[in-house]
Each structure stands twice: as C-alpha cells, then as structure tokens.
Amino acid sequence: MDNNLTQLFGTDGVRGIANMTPMEPEIALKLGRAVANIFTNGTHKHRIVIGKDTRVSGYMLETALASGICSMGVDVMLVGPLPTPGIAFIAKSMRADAGIVISASHNEYSNNGIKIFDSDGFKLSTDYERSIEQLVQKDLAGISRPTGSEIGKAFRIEDAAGRYIQFLKEVFPYSETLEGLRLVVDCANGAGYRVAPTVFQELGAEVIEIGTHPDGTNINDGCGSLHPKKMCELVEKFGANAGIALDGDADRVIMCDEKGRIVDGDVIMALAALDLKRRGKLNGNTLVATIMSNLALDAAMRDNGINVVRTRVGDRYVIAAMRECGYNLGGEQSGHMIFMDHNTTGDGILGSLKVLAAMRNSGKSLSDLSKIFDPYPQVQVDINVLKKCNLSTIPELNRAMRSFEGELGADGRLIVRYSGTENVARVLVEGPNRDRIKNMASELAGLISSHLT
Image (cartoon, rainbow, N blue to C red; front, side):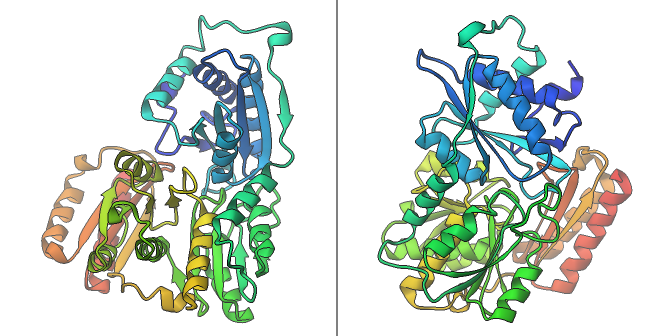
C-alpha cells in the first residue's frame, strides 16, 4: 500500500484531487469496505446512507463506495445530491449504521472528499478514523466477504430531499411565515440547489435564485458563501430583505442585510446567542467559537452575560466542545452554524432560518439586528504552498511573528496556520490599525511564500 495513505483523514474527512490518490475509486472502494466492517456490529440488517454534492466526480466515487459496502453484505441507501447536514439527518432518522458524504465543501470542482457520520449523525472520532485507515492500509486482509444472497443491495431513497425539507420547515416557528419577505438565495451550484429555494418558498418568501444550475463543474465557481458579491448586488437591485449564500455542500452560510452588507458567521452566532438567551434556551449561557472569530465577538457577548469558549479551527472541534459540556450553540466565522437542539453538524439553511425567525419575532430588519458589535480590523491572506513543513522551522517567520505580537500587545493578535483541507497557509492579523495589520499580514505571507512555494 502507498505510504501516502498512512493518514487518509484530515480535519474534515478525506480530501484530494478527484481521480488521484487518495480521491480515486480504488481507495473509495476500500474505504466503503472498511466503513462497512467498522459499523456492522450486531445481527440486524445493516444499512449505510451515501449522499453527495454536484461535482462530476461524485458519480465515480459514489459507485465505488457503494460497491465496497455491498461487498461486505451491507445495504446502501443512495440519496443523491443533498446538503451534508441533510445526509447526517437522514442517516440518523432512518436508523442507518452510518452516513457518508461525497463532497469537498467550498473547494473547486476538481477536488472531492469523503466525510463519514456515525449512526447518531456525528462526524467520526479520531479513533474511528484511525481504525478505518488501518483497515485500508492492510487491504482489509483476513476479513471475509459474504457470497450469494448475503451480498448487499443498493437502492435510492427517492424522498430524502422531501424529508429534509420538512425537517427544516419545522425548525422555523410554526406561528410565523416568511410571507412578505424577498430573499436572494445563492446555492453555489451545489448540494443545496433544490432544497434551499424550496424551503424558503414553502414558508412563504419570494425567492430570487442564483447558483441553482449545477453542471458538475461550476460548483463554488464565482458564487456561494466564498463569493457573495453577486448576492449582495442582487439584494440591492431587487430591494430584497436579505441575501443567503451557501457553500458547495450547504453546511455553511454567509448572509447580507437589505443594504447589501455582509453578515458573517460571527454576527450570525452573536444574533442567535442573544435570541436564545432572551428565551432562556442558551445552555450554560455559552457560545462556542473558534480562534478565527473576531475579538469583538467576545466583548459583545460578555456585555450581554454570555461566555465565549474558543476551539481550534474546524467545526468538528466546535462540536466536540459542545458535546463535552452540553452547549447547544456554536459555529465559525466562515459560516458553519451548529444548533445542537436541531441537528448534529453545521447547517447553512438552518442557520439562515434562525436569522429570519429572529427578524420576524423582533420586527426588525437584518441591518438593525446586526448592530451587535463593530468588528476589530482583521486581515487574512491565503498562500498556496507546495508542502506543509513545520512553520516553526522558518527562523525569519518566527522572528517577524514575535516582533508583530509584541507590537500588537493586548490590542490584537496574529494566527499563522495551515488549512486542514487544502495546501494553503493562512495568515490572520487583527488589530486597531488596518493599514498596519495589512502590512504585517503581507510581510508574513511573503516570508511563507519565499520558503514554501
């Protein structure tokens, strides 16, 4: 087995360029067999859900995964294109043994990924991931396969999208509708392209759709939560009340108010936290965020009697902290919103419904609701790298970081890290002087680029 497979799983499943290691059908088949082997304890008939986004490579990987699972005597339930949180919901509600999502989320179409949920709808623990890796490395040696009538079957769940749509509508207050609201909804030509417009329309909103014509290659292409400019322009053009932009697998959301101004994950989290606290439903009066969230979020929450717990970057770490302490609200600045009272993973459509419900309940516009805090100036620079070496081994970079940290003091911070899903280094600098932090970020990015590109 290729030594490159010593660690298949990153921070959010297995990722890579489609049809190259590790995102090739041969490995997907073995992953399917390994997952089936791990999650088939007991004597009942076992079933695993497979869903995907709209990438052309999804057909290839879906077929390979299903073949591996069926070869282990486990049935496969195919749901087709469906948001990642929808697949977690379906796997749990149908009492499946596991759920598998084929998606590279916000990445370009040439990439793909495989994420796995357990029977409770939660992403796998590191221990489970390592067990699966070991089985794949050993080529599942010594594991017997069924024959004859014991081989698994694959069949489609035709009403999976309808089930998820109904679930989402029930999250919205039954006494309210979205009648009278005009929304611009950008689905990034991704997994939410059918579900999202339908949810908002059936709740009564007038929906202006963009990013709802996937062709297998246009997912996240100039649209969605990473590219919200068009959404903002259309909100202003059509006099909409809000804009909603999802990413490729619809597990994150970025919004804009009626004036076309961005409402990011930090503001959505703060808005939701205040709403839950007002209704006495914010567990532990605590919001869970990551180190990337703006420092102004902490100050605003503190002023309202709400504690902020911070984790590493990645919704899996947010969810782990929430589960450990029983918190029910968490998320990321990038738009992952986890409402644990309703679902087990980040859900962009659900998050936007919570914002719309707050607008309805308060009678306020989104621009008024969003006046929670003034974010501290923050600059982020992404650098494509050829390899991910230990950044602490670059003396010039570390000297510059120490110098800038001393200059910023208690009024700011800087974070230099690698993306967990791409060959990208990220530099974030936060401080009172935008021009100065922009220069700091540029200098750090230049040092990284000179050593790693």
